[in-house]
Image (cartoon, rainbow, N blue to C red; front, side, top):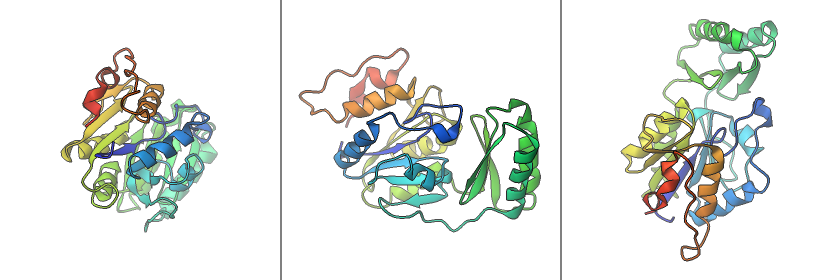
Length: 255
């Protein structure tokens, strides 16, 4: 474990996907598991999410590195995030208009951008995209990032892959093998960056660019992480979940 660094997405990877993003949470007791894993990995564990760091802090144990806004915010354990961006006025106005015009659309303000969720208003997907595209015409330096039933306006040039590269240059990540795990297209850049650094990209439920293997469900990710805490001599064989190559050959994930 000491030779690896973990970069973990939150929604759909550590936590199950739920209809209401505000309701997403770790299973009871798993926060303690994450804290123990961070200790076992010498602190080289980062949760890398599209959520704001403030949102992650409400859902994670203390002592973890947090990366929010798809890389726009980076926060060391116990420290506030570092960020120099703000939401452009045109983007904020577009979000307010969508919130008022389309019942079921959920707006998630972030320190550096805005995410528009349409899981409960699928008919509004095109309207959400068009409104944000128009807003970006007045917001140079911002781009759209699409995910599962969500479209987000965020600063250009910042993504999860860039955040991984930044962290890999400093302690406690420097010199370790990065293992990136995620479930959405937004995690692809993180997996590609891990692969370029000699590490692994592991998808969850889907095959993503840069992912060499995959888990089928967040429960398998959590089982794999729990297994990493067992002493080597007492560690049970990792369970074989259907179509889950990442768990079938656990030795391939262990240096």
